[in-house]
Image 1 (cartoon, rainbow over the protein chains, first blue to last red):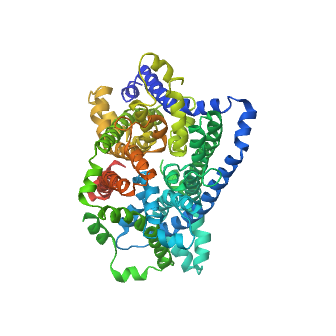
Image 2 (cartoon, rainbow over the protein chains, first blue to last red):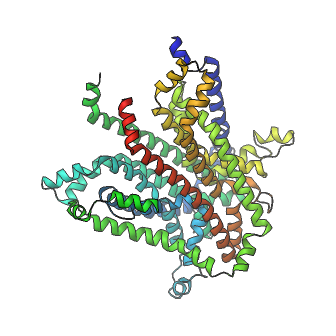
Length: 287
Length: 299
């Protein structure tokens, strides 16, 4: 017992540290998000539903859904391609590619949007050609989709790379040796072994695509009912002092965030549940 | 240059590479490179071109204007302070989550990721509502003369919010895998708990803490969405660098915005570079024969 006490803290300091952690998280995370729900229902359930059924809100939901529906599949495809080439093959410049995948994390969202204004805007090299052909990218839906894709592309790749790295290439090689076609190998060997990483990466990517604010704000032009995504709509409502409406729309985004965290917990649980089956013989042998 | 050497050392001789029978290298590599090229390299290169098309004197005048200098200072020191706060409280949170048992621990553990998942605009209006003059925490503080929202304190709070998960999630796994024997040895040798913490646990956590600090710092440096709502956005006083870039973009001063963006990019890439090279060195140390021998002995 004395041995045990010497490598842990006294009861008092344990309670004290736990209290500090919980109060800190409460003040920084919980109170602000709880207040969003409180303010959203200030005008009652009717006001809340009214804010959500507003045509501009519905249009913002539509724009957000379009951006997600294009960005997420593209990034899943990219995630697979990048993870496959990086983890199963050896080539020069691998570290450079891995670093490039991290770029959106290092760049401020405002700059992420700005680079596309510089590339496609009226002032740019491509600008005159685009306007001659009547193509609008900046201050229109394509710009929002492109900026969203840029900001969210690392998520799937970053989830898949460590999982595929750990698995190595033996199982795929075995499948090929046994006469599987490349597609069969992918569908029956690679895909099942990475499915939870893929699931979580895609959810994370989608959540970020829904919530991206800075980059989209630069390229959208804030045209109400046309190029406003949900977070931009929250900003517009807030700046026009429609506080309860802004917070009502914000609750939607918080719900999506909470669902994301739930999906993460599920993915981790399922992964842990599938993994021990393989490790069981080793663990049993240990004692 | 280290990285090139590392890759060269990793890659096998050409003969064996050609023998790798897995399919799809050309396709996946081609797609990856095209995607990265079109989505990352070409757009980022616009900043380089735009910067070099500026006159040096105009560039210098933009990035050294008093308003820009004030914005750098605020962004830099704000992010530094927020990262430091997160290191202290993030370590406490990670410690409590790994070492203690209490009711609702799994829920608390999941909630730590909220700042990753909640859109920054939502975080911004939520924090402003709490710390504003009428907010539940802002109102009592305003009565004693401390203004949080629409002042520098507000910026600090938003930066702490967005950076918190980085420290917790880098420190937590290290604490989880830490061997109990080391602490037991310290205790057997007569060290008090505080001594063990300061001279055994903290040095062990130091690399993870540094990574968490740098990630939290980089995130806070570039943060825009949550800060614009709470900061009040007064030039020279509460205007962060990303907001100044945004202002210039809205005035169609693309050259000015690009110049400031170039400064910010250099800063954030330097942070990322330092983190990556440290992590890489750590990874190499873990693979070195000495560490492997030590690990084998430990198990």
